[in-house]
Image (cartoon, rainbow, N blue to C red):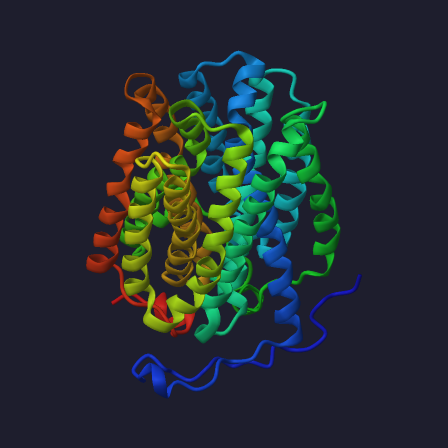
Amino acid sequence: MGPWRNEGLGWDGPPDVSDVAVSARPPPTPFTPYQKRLFFFLSVATFFDGYDLIAITQILPNLRADFGLSKAAGGMLVAGVNLGAVAAWLLVRRADRWGRRRLLAITIAGYTLFTVASGLAPDPVSFGIAQFLARMFLLAEWAVAMVYAAEEFPADRRGFVIGVIQAFSSLGAVLCAALAPTLLATAFGWRTVYFVGAIPLLLLAWARRGLLETRRFSEQVASQGAVAPRPLTAIWRGPYARRVLLMGVIWMLIYACTQNAITFWKEFAVAERGFSDAQVGTSISIAALAAMPLVFFVGKLLDWIGRRPGAVLIFGVTALGVFGCYTFHAQWALTAGLALGVFGATAVLPVLSAFNTELFPTELRGDAMGWANNGIGRIGHVLSPALLGVAAETFGWGAAVRFTAILPILAAVLVVLLLPETAGKELEETAALD
């Protein structure tokens, strides 16, 4: 397969529309043929991210039974796996030195390999190690995909692109939820979920050969040379330290709520509401399908009303959904709450990905994403499952997870008070400090 980009992007950036009323905006900037192919590739890549990320939520009760783990031990296992998201920081920051294309190729190959290894694991320790590494490569791939989306698409459609790419992750989650009951019933049980998920990843690893480096990174290297090696803490001694810290705290609040709400919902539904595997699969599938139209609209919403109003709306819906899906008793009511929770768990990501890629310059974009998302934000992702697992032993999953619904509200307050509006502006403008 030859390079995808056989022509220039043909795009010098849309006119400045930051001060123009929505009704007076020109038609959206059209995509070039290369941008269309890139859009498809990144969407497919995040589709399988979604499959892999939700897999552990579908197999956790079965895996605990197979390995003889308690609820607390299951929570510790999830926390250990989630450490891979923090370790991804070491890979993500390399995007500013190695380039976006090279790192994307490495991460796709890595999480394909360790997804297969997860299905072959003979004990909980080896499973945890394989999933830790798979998660590390997977989250690094996701971060680089977001950087690609920010750097290669028009400013007036950047939110739309990031939103749709992330929405494909939800489609992957839907597929996993729909297939899980059937796959769990096979001879290999929960292992089949990983074997099936790894097959298309091999095709994706082959297809990425046509991918080229982002235009902004290539122009930076051409004009300034390759980024010199930087100490791990270099960004904290520069003018963007405050933005990194702020974005990290917001990511941490969001992850501590959304990741646990999805991860432990099956445990809650089975243990406290008496659901079967089939009922859980049905509820998750219906909830995810119901959330799909809204999820695909998120990107347009962010370009239309702006990042900050969009964050307030989406974070508020997330809080309501998480509270509802761990409170109600009837299956239809729980499923409705879960639909909002699934929507929120996906919709918050394009909001924060847009901010995190737009608020930093090209030479720091990977490092900033790595520090804010993986370094600081994932602290909430890693520590909260273990804490909630212990709390669930005493209070139950419902009471433990329901408490986290306040966290998106706190995150919305920080966005409104401390982040600038970035919708419709070029990256060079949004990255500038006041």
